[in-house]
Amino acid sequence: MLNDVITIKEHHTQAAELVFEKISQKIDKKKYIIAIAGEVSSGKTTLAYLLGRMFKIKGIPSKSIDLVDFYKVPPLERRAWRQKHGISEVGVEEYDWELIEKTIQSFLDSKKMTMPQVDLHTDLVDEVTTDFKDIEVLIISGLYAFHCEHIDYKIFMELTYRETYENQKYTGKEVMDSFRNKILEKEHEAVQSQKKMADYYIDFNLFLNSYHL
Image 1 (cartoon, rainbow, N blue to C red):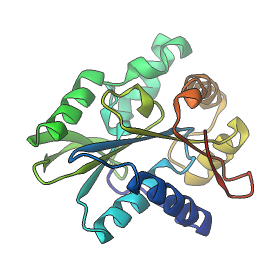
Image 2: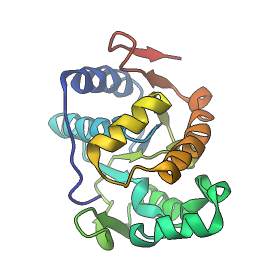
Image 3: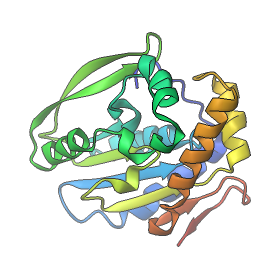
């Protein structure tokens, strides 16, 4: 996303350092894919940014993509679409998985790829073109990132439903009302179903430590 606000606190940096140390020991091929899944506003984008910066320091070119850019319905139309079709339609199938997998394959094949990019100042969907030729690590963050194929390492970021709600109010990205509350509940169920697939689990409430499953 363009113009997204990233808040970096000490516990984010600590978590990124722990994850980076673990991943650095596992990268054994030229093209490596990391997925960061978890609740809304749990710090996925922040972790992706910090990992990308650490890879850069180590001389390893990386690229981060946020699955929020790959919704089938654009931001300005999404709330009305959800109200029309009902809460039951909220979830994994709202994403353009064909385009997501095409992007991942372009990375694996070292090709150029034009991808959507949401501008949070306008809520319009722009496009950005990336040449994956020299990119060695792809970092994918999103609610349902574990649904992507070809993932080498999966990181799950925990957050309670109540914390998700409070963080959403703080960021002000969406109107917080009873309908939004139902959406968060529905997303929470789908997000939590991925937890068992994680290679690494982060819960900032548990003494700010990370836990390997």
